[in-house]
Every structure is written in structure tokens, then in C-alpha cells.
Amino acid sequence: MNQKSGRTGEKLYVVTRMSILIHIVSIIMCMIFVLTFLEYFGKHSRQLAHSPYMRQLNHPQQCLTLWDDAGIRGRILLHFDRHINANLKISGLTPENYIYHGIKKGYIRKIYHIIPDESWLEVSKNIQYIKNAYYVDGTFRLNIDGTPIIALRLKDLPNLKEKVVVNVNARYWSENKISEVVHFLENKGIASDVISVTGTLSDNDLVTMRKYSEKSS
Image (cartoon, rainbow, N blue to C red; front, side, top):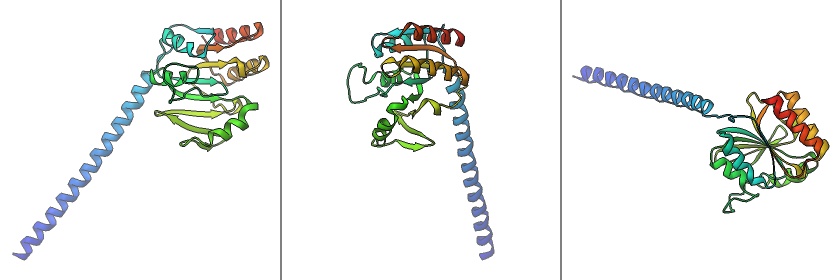
């Protein structure tokens, strides 16, 4: 009787252990499937512009209309500005929060916030006080509503294989800096199908940006 009970207990132990292993394997397989699906969906949900766009704007928030007209979705944004312009505490659409609206509308999935060299020291000190920001390899990383934001200087911008959306605040980028930005992007092989520039540009700046836009198309 005891031997039978012992054998029965061993069988139950083996069956239970097998069930647990099968359950764990099933969970792992489901996770792999979900990650693969998300990766596939993410890539195929990115939408390029219907045609190349290069616009000079009077107000920075006007780029939302440009992005909507261009039909873009799920894109990488190169944001050339002193500020990130994604204040969650301000209601309505303003120059202080228009990037946040771009995130919420699905135009943008990742942001490289390129800060002018002369502003880097001050901005980097301010970023340190942001709760979820952390420093790595010369850049600051944070996120807004799950959207990754990398704050960095132009020289630290990595190679990017896909076409990007470019947004420039000319107030913080002088004529020489505009040429430097375009030259850097071209050398990196970074193309853009949607370019917006807020503020006054010199004739040379306009020609430089338009040539870059035409080369990228």
C-alpha cells in the first residue's frame, strides 16, 4: 500500500513538474510572439510623407498642421531647439507644448532633442532635475508617455537608417549653425522628407535647407 502511494506521489510530482514547465514555455512563446508582432507592427505603421515638405513657419506649433498635411505617422523627430516644448501641464496648443501634442497624435514615436553647444551646459544642469532623466554616453535619456527622448549635442547624434522629420527653431541656430547642421546630416547619410523651420532665415539658409530637402527626396 505504501509502495503504491509512493509511486502515485512520484507520478503526480512528475506530472505537476511537466505541467509547470509546459506553462513556462507557453508564456515564453507568447512573449516572443507579442514582441515579434509589436516589432513588425511598429515598422509597418511608420508612414513617410506623401511628398517632400520643406516649410518656413511663423509659429512653432504650426508644424502640427504640416505633419498632418504630410500624412506622417510613427516617425523619428530631430528637434533642433533650446527647449523640448513638451510641457504636459499647459492646456491648449502652445509653443511650450506642441511637441507633446505631436506625440499624442501619433506623428512622433522617438525624439532626438539636439541642443546648441552654447546652451548645453545650462540645459544639461536643468535636465538633471527631471525625475526620470538619466545620463549615458554624453546624452540624457527620458521619456514622455512612453516616447523616448534623447537630449544631446549635434556631434553625438548617431547614424539613423530611416528618414527623419526635422524641426528647427532658427532663434537658436545662427546662419553658420544651419549650414553646419545640414552638412553634418548629409555626411551621416541622414535624409528627411519633412522639414520645418520656425523664425527668420537668411537667403543662404533657405537655399541650404531646400537643397538638403531635394537631395533627401
